[in-house]
Amino acid sequence: MRRWVAASLVAGGAMAAQAAPDDSLRPAQRPEAASQGQKYDNYQLASAATDLRPAARPAVLKQSEPQPAAAELNFQGWIQGFRDRALAQGISAPVLDSAFAGVSYDPEVIRRDRNQSEFTKTIWEYLDSAASELRVKNGKAAVRENQARLDQIEAKYGVEKEIVVAVWGLESSYGTFRGKMDVIRSLATLAFDGRRGAFFEGQLVAALKILQAGDVAARKMTGSWAGAMGHTQFIPTSYLDYAVDFTGDGKRDIWSDNPADALASTAAYLKQFGWVKGQPWGVEVALPKGFDYTLADRDIEKMPSEWAALGIKGLDGRAVTDHGKASILLPAGSAGAAFMIFQNFAVLERYNTADAYVIGVGHLADRIRGGATVQGSWPRSDRALTRAEREELQQRLTSAGFDTEGVDGRIGPKTIGAVRAYQAANGLTPDGYASPRLLQRLR
Image (cartoon, rainbow, N blue to C red; front, top):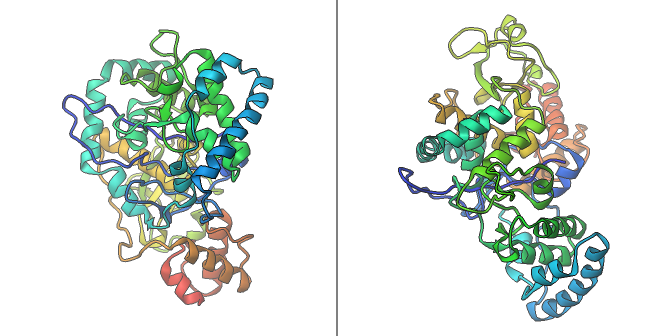
């Protein structure tokens, strides 16, 4: 199962204060997508003033919210029913008593779940924040201040320290924003609400198993409104599967100011899904004149030397090293930067499926290591399509004979394929880029 995460950073020492979102910079992976292992190559990034995650939002965004007084009464009744189900799954009565002591319905959680922002960001706007100069500066400071433990983690798990720190930086601004909401209360409220009840009840049971194991006390199990916890924002099921006790104190503590267990858990997670040490996540490349844009497809993989034979080289003019098979990714179409992406890109997708997040982690890690900013241009005059516009694009493409196989507002592989087919049929560059201009042409 893919891990849904959001993390934070302990600001200290030489680290500059960093403005950060309420939860994280992580583009939120929807639980439904995680369970199905889907990929959403979605460059229309959902964000709010306090949330920079590019996110595919649930289909139902606006419902009437239950009245708190009535909801509280029903919520307490739901807890009694849940208690029986939890006991049947091995949760002890004392753990349940402790976990639910004083727990009440949280209307703020429902408000945030129901009314997530429809404002959007482009890939370049997201990267401007994800790898800002301040975030890079703080990342370098994080590496310096945690050098010994990061070296140990890298040696044990084979995941470069800069990648681990970049995840930390995007998830919680290096521990600064770990989330302060009561996880039991949040998950119980979401499970009771029912819109994604089965998913959140599963997370709630997992959270109770964490309490039963003694890793953390109930009221110290804090996180985001949706139950993501600690420096690198594990949801409870992922914590049970992948968190590690790196300090050897008998607890997998991802909540305290000491980030060691959280950082090691992140590395352990990436290792579990096949991280290859020494292989880049991706390399920015230059495309030759006359490039066949239909080759920029995740399903088309070649060795870098083979891509070089087709004229695709690194920005230094030389062939990219043969690190392994790679694909060409154009997150903003032919008018934007081009990347040659490797297996490690897919590994980072297991952390979060949004390509913008993966590029953000990889690029931030490169910058922390001393690398350059993205050199390619971006179509900065473009704006991101709103969800309604993305749905309209899908509807119009399908009506024109280029089936997107559903209207969900997500610019995923099927929609990109439909865009390519439309572009090719109409004499346009078939780069699969869903731009405002393309929508206007379809109208």
